[in-house]
Length: 241
Image (cartoon, rainbow, N blue to C red):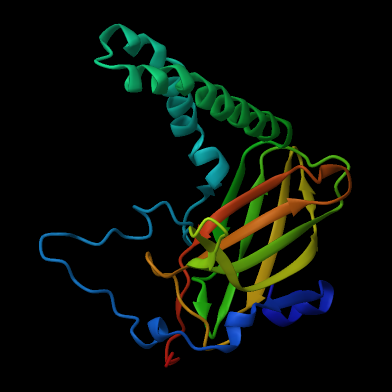
């Protein structure tokens, strides 16, 4: 499905933050700085979706680590036996509360994963600024009571929003979204999408900008959400200045 066909059938909503009109100095340099002795990981090694393979969502990929982290904090009181001081003892007593919170949150995520089933993404084209981003999302269970889903592709700027406690958080730099009708196929559900990406947007970089594709259910499936990190690159011939 081409970008034009997708925009005709499913109106797209584009949003640009106030920072979108300001060219950041970081856009002037897009080449990675080589570090001697360190090999840059490929998109496949980083877990990014790719054209020739199905990739699990971030929610499913990070579940094992969340469970292990929750269990670690939950079992911290065992360390009281070897505690060298009162300060450490206090921390070990509070630790289980963090463990309960992490495990509770992950159990809720796992419940939603079980209800709607695993979601896999395969890209139709490599996402490129000045080009397109297209692909298909495959749910391994039927999305009952959900006729449409909302798909959003967004670029985030790292540590761009200053909080009241003087810490920083990531902020949305640019985004586009559309509602897409789902296509049942037996016991599975297929969702296809295609976005046109204008020139002049930042590409995916580890310490400045990153892209995320998210799909959210509508109607009775509003609690369903899946996301993937997207390896957005420069379109051939396009130049960001």
